[in-house]
Image 1 (cartoon, rainbow, N blue to C red):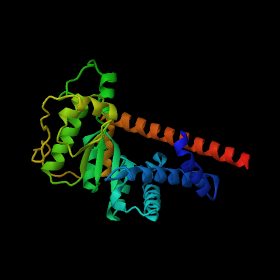
Image 2: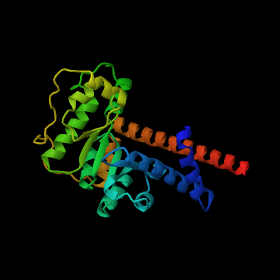
Image 3: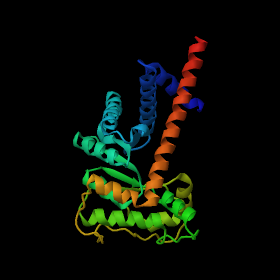
Image 4: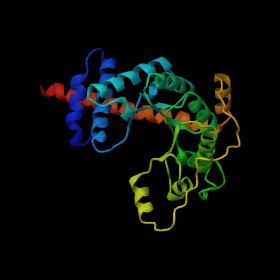
Length: 279
């Protein structure tokens, strides 16, 4: 909605052909990749680009859309080694990631709130998971008596620690990237995690803190869960359903992603109509 992206929006609209629905999908993918290309000029690593959240329960459609996104990046000269395809951690999403990883397309499984999602993601060979620490805390504050959790007592911190320890103890290569932090205590309690995605505000608070920062998570960690687990579909759905927090936050996250997708589509449609009426 800012002027600096106006040309990207117009280019995306100009690239859209076919039916109205297909045009919107094409324009959205074009815009997502265009902005991803701008970010890749500034960073040495990878960009995550999200598949339409309305496909979260459709494995085949997720795979097809992911391939289209990667093809766009590659046609712009960016290799797939710099791309992560972002998919919601539904059963269908995890199955799509399993197929994509076999095709050499690395993925980021998002909206991950439970241990069973994490075990299924690792068994599927996901490149990276991004468990949402702060959203887990939000749910417990909204549904429990406590409002104040210390770093180690934070339920989001405990969830990521459990997942990290299980992965390391069982030799999984899947990267654990803690996300959605509410305070620096959560970040400090997960120091040593493979990756952390931290907002500028919290980075600023960390930068101004001169106290020692001790590593809390270690790659030689032991896990209470023992050997590798590979949940079947019925077990996955049962255990996810049995976790009220994970079930609610996954569903809410998908709804919010869809809401944002629809807002983007309205923006593109409005821009296309404005452009058409001015010609």
